[in-house]
Image (tube, rainbow, N blue to C red):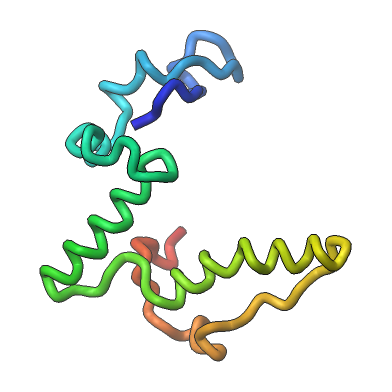
Length: 118
């Protein structure tokens, strides 16, 4: 659920390329999961997204299926902050981004909900 953010929808917004309040568009354009779980997600961190990430993981475990974010994705997402801190400490020098999959990212199954068609 968008809490006071802004949006521009081409062909729908009244002014071309002008951001406006999301509120009036929420009923029509908010994702069904936000509509269903907004109250539970509110305050869970990262604008409510922490709820959805944790909920997806728990549901995957309960159903015995692969979670939408695997350990390699989680490690890659989590390492960004410490690598940024390291880079800043070195005067914004580039730092090596670790390959937690040891090269298997090229051939491993993509489970993050995206196909090769995107």
